[in-house]
Amino acid sequence: MTGAFRLRDPRQFLALGFGSGLAPRAPGTVGTLAALPLVWGLSLLPLGLYLLAVGVAFLLGCWVCGATARAVGVHDHPAIVWDEFVGLAVTLIAVPSTPLALVLAVVLFRVFDILKPWPIRWLDRHVHGGLGIMLDDVIAAIPAAAILHGVLLVLG
Image (cartoon, rainbow, N blue to C red; front, side, top):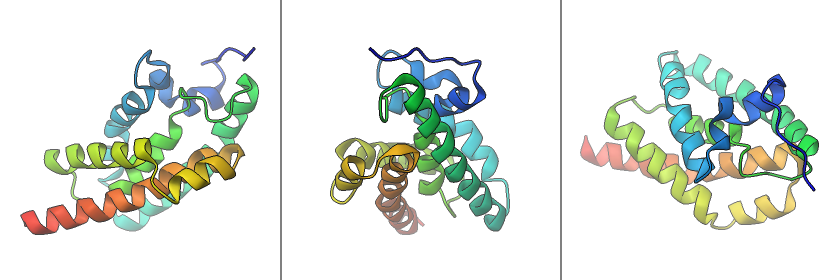
């Protein structure tokens, strides 16, 4: 039996993407969409501050996602979506926040996060705790970001 989520716990509130991870269907996608306003806001920062914010969000995510997983007794419960927030932010590093770029980023990130090609699937299965929850999404964001940058370069 798993424990219940407590949105009053600030760690769980963040890990659950401000509650977006509690969506009954496709919580990862809902969490990614919920991340858009936050990531768009971050995109207004200079690149160095954006990278610092993403790094802090990653470290914070290791803590809050790990604590939430332990509290409910399920490693990487689908409702834990802070990793999607950070994954989307990594996908959008140094990308102009145009509607096209945001849509492509969401689609590309979700494809890699859902399909989990090697080494993402290996990391998902072998790295545990908060770091494991966060790491597979950050690694999924890297090819998504590379493709996004390529597409935007071609489109000019």
